[in-house]
Every structure is written in C-alpha cells, then in structure tokens.
Length: 575
View (cartoon, helix red, strand yellow):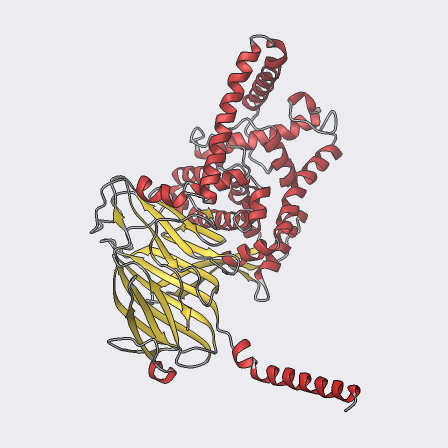
C-alpha cells in the first residue's frame, strides 16, 4: 500500500475515534449536577438546640443520592425529614449508600460514620428538583461566662456540587425574644457575602457563587437573657470561640488596622508634642489655625438663626458639600443617599410595597420592597432613580437583595454617582460666586453669598438639632414635615426629630409612624447600597465599615478564618 493511502486510513480511524468519543462522553461530561440555591431557615430554641429547614434547588442528572455530612459526634441529630414537590419521603432505619437509584427513590435515612452522621436521601427523579429537608441539632447555642453563642458550619467545604448561592436566616423560637444590634453580634466566614442583624432575625447570604473550598460558618454572640442553654462551658466566649474564629480572617485584619491607626495617631500626637518643644511655631501653627477655624465656625453656627425652609433652594448637593466641608460635629458622615430615598418616597418616585412570604414552617414574613413610580423632576434624584430602575428589573419592584446584587456586579455606577455629588455641589457654589477662590473649608474662603448659603445649612441643622429646646408647638407650625425628614436624614438626626415630633404632636402619631416607616425603609436601602460591593465599601469609608463588621454589627463576610466551629465538616452534595 502507498504511504498516501495509509495516511488516509489513519485519518479515518482518528476521526471515527473522535466521533465515538463525542457520542459516548456527554452522559458523563455534561450530565453534571448543579445546585442553584441553598436556602436555610434556622430556629434557635431557648435551650440552645435548633431546628434547621433546608431547601436545595437545582438540576440533578446523575448519581443516586443527595447527602449532607455533619462531622461532629458531640451533636445529637434528630427528627430528620425530607420532601420533594410536596411528596413526603419514606424513612429507612438504615441507609445503604451503595443501594440502587430505585431503592433510594423517595427514601431517606441517616448514614452513621466514624466522624458523625450523613443525612441522605434519594435523588428520586432526574431533572430540576427542589428538596426540602429538616432536622434538629442539639446543642447549637452554648452558655459561656460572658455571653451565650456559637460558631457553627452550616454549609460544608469541598462539596461535590457547590451551591450557586446561599441564603440563611436565623431567629429565636420565642417571637418576643428578638435579635437587635444591642443584644446580638454576628460574623460569617468562608465565602463572599453579607451578614446582618435585621428587625428580629439574622440574615446571611452570598453575593458570588461558592466554589473550591468555600464554606459557610456563622458565629453569633448573644447577651445573657436571650437563651438558657442546656450546655454550660467554663470560660469566656470571647477567648474560647471568638478569638479562635477571628484568626487569619479579614475581621482580624480590620481590627488590627484600626488598632494600628489608633496607635499611630497616638504616637503622632506624642511626637508632635516632643518636636513642638523645639519647633513650636512650625508644628503648633496648624493646630492653632485649626482651633481658630473651628471657633470661627462655631460662633457662626451659634449666631445663625433657625432655618425652617428648604436650605440652598433645595439643591441637596450644595447642602451636602457645605455640611461636610464646614462640619463642626463629631459625626461627619452625611447620609445623603438615605435623604434622597426619603425624598423620592415622599414624591411618589418610589412606592413602598409590602409583600407576604412564607418560610418553610409556614411562618408569615412581610418584606417591604420599593416599586418604581413616577420619574423625578430633580436631576440628582433622577440619576439615582435610573440606578434603582435597572436594579429592579422588568417587574419594576426593587427588593433589598436585588439592589445589593446589582450594585455588587456594577459598583462603579454608584461610586460615580456619589463622586458626582461633590462636583455638583462645588460647581453650583462657584456659579453663585460663593467662594473667594475655587473652594475652601474656612469661613474666610466664603463670600457674603457663600456665608448666606452656609447660614441656611447651619440654621437648618440647628433647628433640627434643638427640637428638645423648641417645645412650643407654635414654632413648629407651618413646617413641611416631609421636607423636614429629608434633611433630618441628611444630617443623621431623623430618629431624634421623629421622637420630638411625637412628643409635640401626640395627636399626629399615626401620620408620624408613617414617616418613621419611610426613614426605616430609606436606612435599609441606604445600608444595602453601601454593603453591596467590596469596591463600594473601599471607596466609601471602607475602614469604618470593616471595623463595624469585625465588631459583629454586620457587613461583609470573611473568606478566611472561622476556625473552631461545631457541626459541618467536609464533603456533601450528590453522589
């Protein structure tokens, strides 16, 4: 045979092999199981035990069973139950992992291992499935000398099939015992997401798909009195649990940075004092100038009259810039995003919509979402309106998690909007000839026109801040409360103002309660914006938010850390 003919045969054999491979491989290559979501509802009981209800949704096209290992022999697992599409599975006294697909179909059981247990149930039908399974764990919350609490792994590492997203809520079985920022602290480890304490429950969720060695550990710390755990541990929660979990975590790094900054600040001032003995003029002159500036601004503030109308002709960017650059208050953080949301709700650009949902146990939950209304006439509000419109999607109803996810993937949209506020404010002030030069933060930098604008900001802030002194109802007559709350939110005084209004106007409690709900909604969505993306947090006072999260007040999770946990382990998924 000729070489040319042999080459043709070799080519044909090769192509045939490739074709056969393509035909044979799909069943193993493409029929991969995918878990889209893992939702958990965790009820923490007074004695420290918990009832966990999990819902796994995904596409299941291979294997025979779903399983979840809990590698902790100190835990008692009971009341395991499974259902799919409303069909209850049948419990088997012993579980055989080697049984066939049909033998496991609509069956469930516990496989006991050297490390603990595996909660197992049959895939039962291939395709898109949602499995709901529940079980009790005892104990979860334990009592320590200083606090009650736990560090528990609810989603294992190294799962054979990783969830695209996780969503976990935790609440007390006694509805009168609610989680608050005063009584409860929360941290989460092993994935990128957020952990918060909201209303009367804790909420932990992912913002990007889990992969590799991701896991979900949740650590919660409670003041004494919320629980009466059966298990008492000799020692402190901070030493035995919290400090161990914090090791090598982003939380630890944030606290160390804050401590270093504090130490650096202290060292800086000591250094200044020592050098001032030699170079007093050079180093104390800035301090003297700062004191002179601050005293001049304080005198200007004290001389300012109450301003009850909308300051700066309603240009919120001007008010924001002046309040920030000429601040004489300890809290320099201006909540202008929250103020804009309050204004948009007042103007019906955003309409609060309450929606009922039901948990796995049929417990009713009411969520407040924002329905997109009429387009704002104000340019600044209109730009935020379009950000919200895109985040809301086709139904035009914005959910808090929807906003977080949109801004997580599009952080620059919000960063650009916030940064533009500075430019808008300064440009408007320059056009009004408010500065003696391009800008500034000292009283002498302002023209008479600029001082008039600042007097309106100071007068408005003073009017809101001194409500406790303005006890006469007649002084408050004629004030448009809706506008009042916009600027009270801007200055961070909304809670104080509402409390005082209720005192002065007891006959208007119902109306004021509605305004209070508006402020609460704006605060929730304002927080959602700031916590939606690491990039946004980095651009917007990242250090403060990182420290707040590290101290357990809620915020971004830590991918690393979380050691010393109970429960969980490695593996799980499908097989």
